Every structure is written in structure tokens, then in C-alpha cells.
Image (cartoon, rainbow over all chains, first blue to last red; front, top):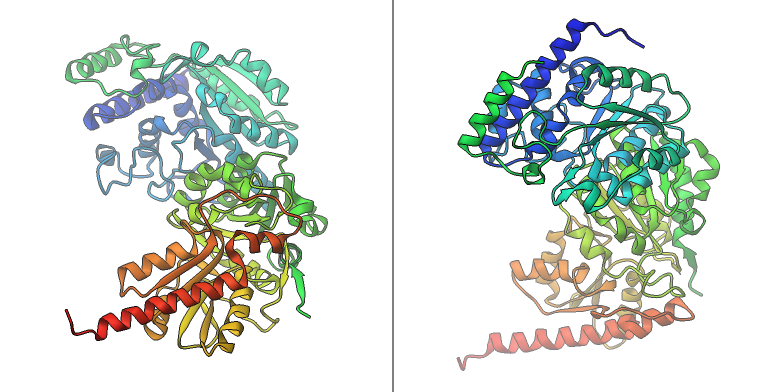
Length: 279
Length: 324
């Protein structure tokens, strides 16, 4: 397992903050989007794109690159911000998000946006698609990893578990699923709408290796990603406990902020809170 | 004696044979390999064969992942069961334009013994409405065989409909097929019979009966419903002035509808659609009787041709009438 310096952790926390600022700005500017689930996944996406993934923005089609699938496609502003800061397209293009003619669609479109591996937005597809990519890697003799970030609500989709069975049957150890377990979905708390517990036991019984972490703790995220590479006989799921709307006091744990853009006053407060946040 | 050959077997063997030529071809199936005859492929290329169990959505989506990884997945189940994965096909195959080949086996009423749950009478309508999707229906075993490499080598989503039945051979081995190009298989000037799948043979039979009555019916094999060969439809409309479509599908949304859309846009000529009325279909003891009972008899095509011709004549009368 790699050593992660304090300096790296501080840098990545700064990046995560930048991604949150970008996502909020994009959602506010557009007057639409999904702040709650974007904010909850900031440390996970940051750790992947700015440290862990083997990717090259100058060669988005490099056959051996790691694949990242944002199964929870509604967190698109977070993905777009990460891709822009990695150099897949200019950061200023983030302002075009959702405009007619923009390369940045409401939900990710693999044909339009460089770096987007798969078109997503309808929930539940990620695990199956990730499994297929891992099978392809095996057939092609390539050793890339496929990372699938899914929302906890996606664990309510039957097709997620079809994918889990496929990944387990074929022992796809190069598949790493990460569940952004913020316990809030569009209509309310996940544990009320359709309880998932015990989520760990569910994945375990589907023959996944389980890692359970605080999804806002960069060090824990990095260590879990490293640890997943040490597991060679089965796929891994990282259950990342997170807070929906993380970092913005009035958004945290509120289903209302699943898919709502802040007004000017709310936006000003949100930015102030984020900028004043010392980690 | 008319030679009947199994379409599914021809498909299965062709897929296995093509697997030798193209090592990127992989097969995903949802627990119906013995039925849709992908077992030939499975035996020869076990490492490129994935049976995912009764998980149609998982089958399509894992096929999508394989396609993203550079493989050419043929995903297989009964056409009727494929409907369970329509959202996967819309979002992850058609919209994302992944190179996935959707193979709808046991298509139409060919699984005659299993009933409406297992028939596919609306699959063409659904697949045809999806942007980016190519939709093809082979007329016989030979055409199914020829379509396998064609479908594999086309870069993009394809829906290929495969019958369970042994159907009369229409084509020999020299036959050539091209995506999006309808084929005139019998010349005639009075009316055109446009069919696909098993109905192509029945259109040919109908043309023989019509010939005895002095009616020269042109017969077209419209194996590709999307992209439809619009110029051919326009041409036969112009040259014969009356059209009958014949398909093993609901008359809503299939070949007949596709032809009607073309005629509606350009110069309409009388069109009669032979197919399944807007109804679910029962089981029967054999396939042919089921086709016959539900309005797809050779004589149904003949009668439709008479109706189209009658309307055509009426149209000519109106045209020549100076009373108005």
C-alpha cells in the first residue's frame, strides 16, 4: 500500500474544495442540477482523479487507462470539474454546462465530453457496465481497473445486483465499486424510502470484498483504493459513509437539496461557508 | 417439396464460424443458449462466451461494458424477453452508441407453443423508434447466416430478429445482402408486395396466385426496416401504384408503418398492411397455423393485393373524372 504524505492529503483536500465550489457555481449559474450528491462525493472523485487513477488527459483513448464510470450521473458537475482540472477540456468550459450546443450535457455523455467513459444518468447501470469492461480487459490482456461510483439509492435497483452477480461469477478483481452512502435520496432518507441495511452484508453475500470508510476522509479513501488492488480473487466494494450536501450547513442531510439549485442568497452563503472552511 | 431450414441454427452456426474470423466477437446470453443456439459459439470459444443467467438487463449492460472495452458483443435472448431491457438498450446502447448487437431470438410467433408472454409482436416498433439503431429481419436461414458478419462489421447498435422456426428457403448461397438496401426478388408492374422475415416467402407464394389471375405482383424483401430503403419504396409506389406490406409483427409500428410513413410524406398510393391486428396472440400446436389464424395467410396477402388494386383503380377513375 502506498504512503500518503500529509502534504498530499492537504493538497487533495484543497482540490475537493475546488470541486465543491465549481459544482455549486455551475448549479447556481445554470439554475439546475444536483448539489446534494455532488457535494457528498467530492473527496472520492478528487482522490480518484487527482491521485489514484492511471489516466492521461492528453491521451483520453489510451487503451491501458483506468476507467471511471459515474453511475450516479446526476453528480455530473463534480465529474466535469474534475475532468477540466485534469486538463481534458478548458476550465472555462464549465460555464457552458447544460447550454444548447455545449459538450457538457445535463448528465454525462461519452460521445460529447472528453474523459467521460460512459453515458450515465439513469441509475443502476454502473456495476454491469463495469463488469463488462473488466471482462474486456481480461480478453484483451490489459490490466486496467474499472472504478464505478454509485449512489446508495442505486443499491435499490435490481440491475445493480445482476451486475454484482456477474462480477462475482467471473471473479473480476479489477472492478472496484464505491458506494456514496449518504443515506438521502430524492424523496427522503434512504432508510425510510427503501432501507438498504445491512448494505455491507448484502455486498458480502454477493461475494464482494468489503471496505468500509469515511468517504470524506481523503486518507481513508486513498488507503481503501490502494487496498482494493491487493484483493485478487473477487471484486471490491468500498462503502463510503458520506453526508449528502457535505460542507453547506443548510444542505446537509436534506433531501430537498438532491436536485435543487440555490438562489442568489443561498449561493452566497454556501460559498462563504466553503471558503471559510478550514480543513 | 419446399425445403425448410432452421433460422436459429443457421444464426448459431454462422456466429460460431464468424468467431473464428473475428476474435473480438463475444457472446452474452441470458440462460437461453440452448434455445437461441449460441451453444455452437460457446463450445468453440468458451472464453468469449458469458452466460449471465436470467438477467436480461444485466446481459445488455455487461454487453455495453464489453463494447466499451473494444469487443463486439452479441447479446442474446428471446425477443419478447429482451423487452425487459428496453431502457438499457435506449440509454446504454442507442443513446451511448455502443457497438452492441441485440439479437432477439424466438421472434414473432415462432415460439408458437409458449404464448403471448413469449411472442414478440412489438419489438420492431420499439427498436425502430430508437435513434442510431439499425433494425434487421432475415427472410430465411441463408439470409440470417449472411447477416452475422454484416452486423458484426457494422460499427454501431443493431437489432437483429431471429426466428425459432424452420422456414422455407428463399435464397441460395450466392445471395448478397446489404444493410439498408431492399431487394426486388420478383418483378411485376401492377402491385408491390413488401415483406420481411417469414412473410417474404408467403409474398412470393401470393405473387404466384395473383399471376394466375393476370396480376403481376412485384415482391420485395425489405430485410432492413431501419434505415428503411426509402428510395425503393418511392420507386415501387411510382412504378406499381399499389403496395401491400406483410410482416410477422403488429401492424402498429413495424414494416407497414414504416412504409406508410414514407408514402404519407411523398405521393401516397393505396397501402394495405398484412400483419397481426392490435391484439395479443394465443398458443397453437404449430407455427404455420398460428400465422394463418392471425391474418398472415398467403390468401390474406392476395386479398390485400386485390383491395389495394381496387383502391388504385378508384384513384385512377377519380383522376380521369372531369365532373369536379
